[in-house]
Length: 105
Image 1 (cartoon, helix red, strand yellow):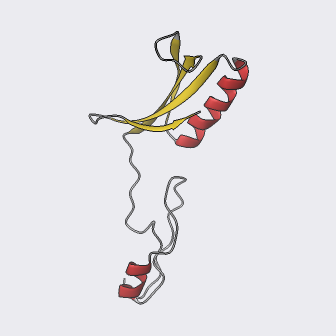
Image 2 (cartoon, rainbow, N blue to C red):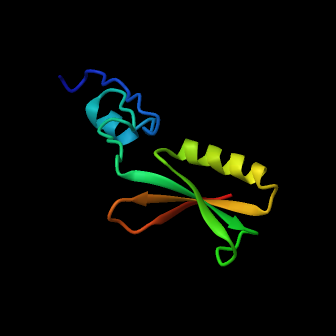
């Protein structure tokens, strides 16, 4: 493939898309942020429900999801179903790595 040929965008739902100014300038063509991006297959999203938003009170795992959108849908569903008594937290985990907070709902 020559340097000026367009590269098709990734159709993966988590792929980043946007104008890569530096890459486009050096390549002489439009370069999308998804070029060279690889999905993180080890990432999972854990949804926990915390009674009154406090981990020290009753809490439980709602589910483990392979993408953030599904986890956020579970947060909305669980929060509505529990009538406001529980706040949900989404935590992104990668196997064999330290955890990282994604969102507090």
